[in-house]
Image (spheres, rainbow, N blue to C red):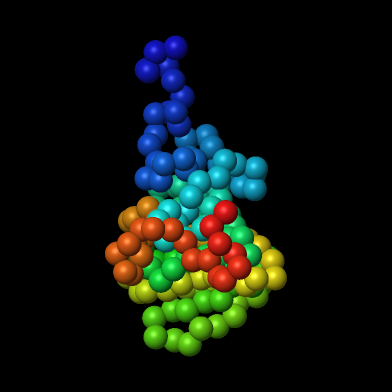
Length: 156
C-alpha cells in the first residue's frame, strides 16, 4: 500500500513519542489497555498510556508506591484526578498536602510542583494537559537524572 492509500491516522504525528493520536476515525479508546510510555522521563517515575487530540493530551498514569516526581514545571497547565492511592502533593509555595483517590489537582503553567505516591500503594491518576507542550516537563534543578524515590524504595 503506498502513502496516498494509507489511512489518515497512520500519517499523523504525535508530540509525545509512543502516544496514540485521536481523530480521523479514532474516537473511542480502552485507555488502560494501550501501550505505556514514560510520562515524566528524567524527573519522575510516572508511566502510562497517553492519547493526543488536536489541542489536548490525556493519560492514565501510574506511580509506584514510594516513588514519583521531583519538583518540576512545564509550560502547559495540567489537571489530575486521583483514581487510586494517595499522592503527596506540593504546588508552588503551598504546604505539602495528601491527595487521596477522588481528589482533583490543578497545576498552572510554569508553576513548580511535585507528586509522590505514598508508601502504602501505587497511585493511578487520569491527567489532562493542553498540547502547547508535550507530557514531559523539566526538573526545577535542571537535572534530568530520574524520579523521586522515598527511602527504601530505590530505583528498580
